[in-house]
Length: 294
Image (tube, one colour):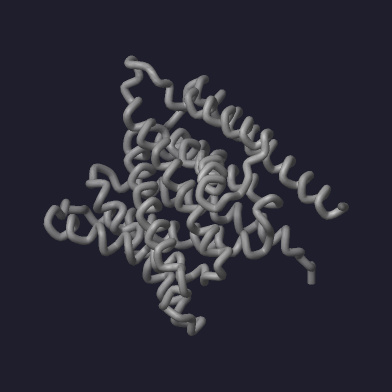
């Protein structure tokens, strides 16, 4: 039997999460002209039951650890805003553009971690963040002539909120909170918040639309659990760059399913942001090696 080390397992899990999240985005877009609130509800409703099953099977507590509740709430509020931003953008712009704007989240996580968790941002990290923002501008194309400017800006805002949510997740991880409970709390919170709108403003769905949203929920659950497992197998500095494989999967899915062809400026933005992610990946590994040797 072939032995697989933890880093390889982490890479496999994070690439699997990228595939799952690409599937989620594609199914959300395939669901068609349905209110964003309704799409978000089904995305989290299905994920909630997956997390519930895992918690019951592992006989884990449903109660947050002492001091964790406020971070669960922060993670859930900003995470939900992030999902809204991402889903809105998916309906308006190319799949790969929306996915790339959402992948600004690691850079925002660095900023928020420095502000709220007091983790220092090194000069090279600050440069990477600044250049990544420049890359995002190539995708957003801020001008009055861009008819998708608002949708792109909302997608960028969604990436910012996702960065805030990841910061809260990191804080919960530092406090020793159960990863399955983090997923369940967020999914349950999002379901409860979006349920009233679904009840009073339900938009009729065809069977194919319902199936697409349920599939989006399954993919979302797969993505959340895969990425949680990935960071259990290996630290962020060793595997985080592989999360950007989602941009490749999104470009492929966008072209073959929706006929999306991003323009030249978007491709420039992709290259800039991914290059900064690779640079950060190399820089973090070098820092860790130097600390280990000292």
